[in-house]
Every structure is written in structure tokens, then in C-alpha cells.
View 1 (cartoon, rainbow, N blue to C red):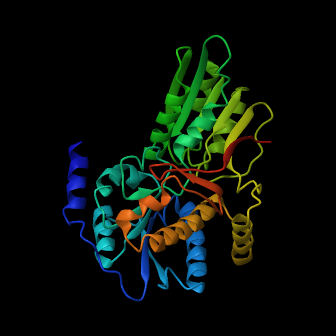
View 2 (view 1 turned 90 degrees about the horizontal axis):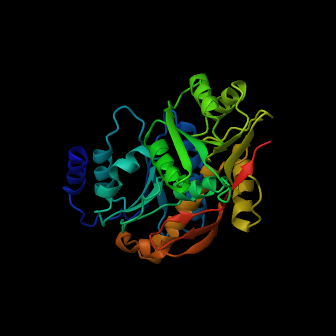
View 3 (view 1 turned 180 degrees about the vertical axis):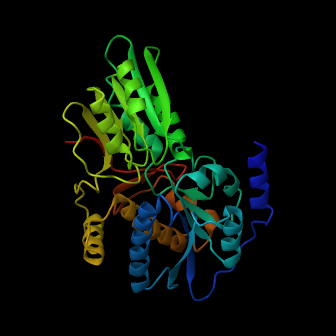
Amino acid sequence: MGAFATVAISLLSVGCSSVKIDEGTYPVGVMLPLSGEDSEAAREVLRGMEMARDEINSSGGVSGVKMSLVLRDMAAKDFDFVDTFNALRRSGVKVLNIGFDKEVILRHKAISGCDDIFVNYLCTYPPVTIGSKNSTRIFLNGAQQGDIMASAVDADQKGERQLVIMNVDNFYGKSNADYLSFCLKTDKVKIYRDVFGSAEKDFDIFSTQIKRLWAEYVFYVGNGATLPDFVSSLAKCGYDKAVVANCGFLNFNFVPPNSLELLRIETLFQQGKLKGEVSRRFAANYKMKYAKDASWMAACGYDSIVLLARAASKQRFNPASMRGFFSNMKCEGAMGSIEFDASADTTMQIELVRQK
């Protein structure tokens, strides 16, 4: 608690006075792990953002002002969150995108005290926008995923049941697994939890224990990179029930063993089910530019910049009032239908899909 208090003081001690925007550009900050283990997902987000920026500028900018993206690599060895955050504010950045989960979970309460900057959290941490008047989330919501994952369990089934939750051993995994546990817990449910490393390859020791418990469902909460190895290990150990997985930042296509059932959260965007003009146009333009299909991460990046530009223009560049643009708003984006609640948090078009 003491460490967090120190962070809060250091963030707010610089002051939250307004900062003048350079006359030639509207700078939008982007803090992402552009190197390291999450760099692939981060660069997908950035590609979508760059496409949105280029479209906005070619159409006259944000209320006539050209937009620029000010990038900072959160995975760089010399990166310091507080110094970078305050430096961006002093340079004139009034809109900032922060991803993915580690720094967000640590800092979001302190950031909420700054009324000179509006923040889009590119993270799944369930309560991130609650109690924060200067933020929104244009990204998948961990609470929405948890609700859908929990729906895989038949609530009407009689008798006791055993469930296992396996989550990656970091802030992202723990926070989403905590919420999932809350969704699954009833008087007749026993939940067993364990954690695995972000680069785990050998899951046999976990699979052996899961087989011994003979859980009805095994829930996987991770970035997706380890899911194929995890499922293969379970099948090899003789587990033949159901695995339910979250969407994750990295979605690898693989064929699961026939001996068990794999259910996974997927976006309707990645399934190609969206028929809206924005989604279809973005997907086509992305493929033309990069010679590959766009991921949902890129679509979220695109929607983030488009919607933040609209909010800035509508609210006359005042970050203190931008939350009002998002609260209780519904719109169509690259990710399809996006709904914002009163706290400017999102639900997006996702569903639980049986993998074959």
C-alpha cells in the first residue's frame, strides 16, 4: 500500500494544469510494450492506430488540426512510467492510450486524479474505468469475457462440481481469474486455482494434478501463446472434459485433440461475421496495406484513434469533458457494435466458440 501511495503522490505532484497544444498538430500519446513478449500484439494495435491517423489527416485532421502519434515503448529498459507520463503531459499531450495491463493496474487510480489528460486504457482489467472521470476503455473487457466463460457451466445441473482455473502468473492473469472465480462460485462448486509462467512450455505437472481432480471444466486465462501446449498436455495426460479459454492477446490457430472439448472467446471481427461498412472497409484496407488479415488488436487500435478524435473534436479539445462523449454511447466501429456504459467502459461483440 505504501508503494502505491508513493506512486500516486509522484504522479500528481507535478500538477494537473492545462497544457498548450502545439499549433501545428494534435498529439495523441501511445504507451505500448513495443518490444518484449507482447510486442507482436502491441504492434498490431499500433498499425491500426496509424491507419486511423492517416485517414483522419487525409480528411482534414481533428477539427482542422493534423493528428500525430507520440510513441513510447513501455518495455524499453530505460522506461519509467511516471517520468514518461508527466513528460507527455508537459509536451502537450492531452489524450493518451496506455496498454496493456501491468502498468494500468498499478497506476490507474493515480492517473484518475489528473483532469488535464484523457486516457484510453488498452487493457482487460475489469474495474479500470470505475471511479475514474478521465478515462475510457476501447478494448476487450475482462468482466465481459468472464461472464461469457462462466456461462459454459450449466447452472441448472444438480450436485457438486469441481472446476480448475489456470492463469498466467502476472497482473493480467490474476485480475481476470479473480473475476472469473467470482462468476463461477456457488455453494456447490469447488474451485482450484494454479498459475503458470508467461513462457511456460511444459504443463505436464499441472495436467497430472488436473487429471487427478477430474474437474468438469478447466479454465485458461492467458495471452494465448501457451494455450496449444496446455491443451496438448491435458489430452496427453488423459483429461477428456472441457477447456474454456479467454480471448488473449495472441490467438494462434490450432486443431485441438479430439479427446477433449475446447471452447474459446473470440471476437466477431476475427470470425469475419461483421457486415458493417466500417469493419469491412478497415479489414480490406489493412489487408491491402500489410498483405495479411487484421487481428482484433489492430481493429481496437483503429477504433481507439477514430473515437478519441471524435471526442476531442466534439468536446473542443477539453480532456476534462471527454468522458461525457463516451458515457452511455453506442457506435459502429471496426470491432462492430461497441457499447459504452455510464463509466465509459465497453462491451464488444464477442462469443464463446467451440474450436474444431
